[in-house]
Amino acid sequence: MKELIQLTGEALRIHRETLVIDGHNDLADKIIDKGFSSLENFRRY
Image 1 (cartoon, rainbow, N blue to C red):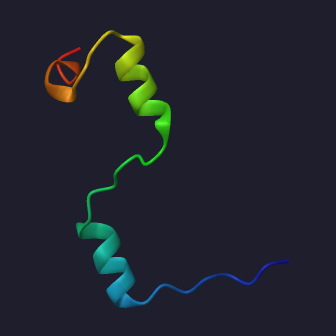
Image 2 (tube, helix red, strand yellow; image 1 turned 30 degrees about the horizontal axis):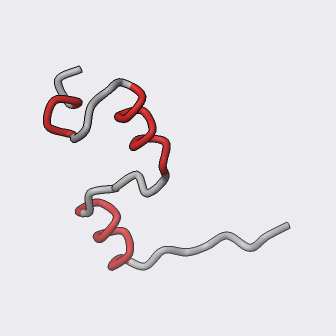
């Protein structure tokens, strides 16, 4: 069994205050599949 990771207070603060960005292509693929060339109109969809 793997040992549990203990997060520091600093790590928890960063986690709470940071925007998470989807770095995979699945979001870009959905945007393209829907026919949008940018996020400008996609967020309204």
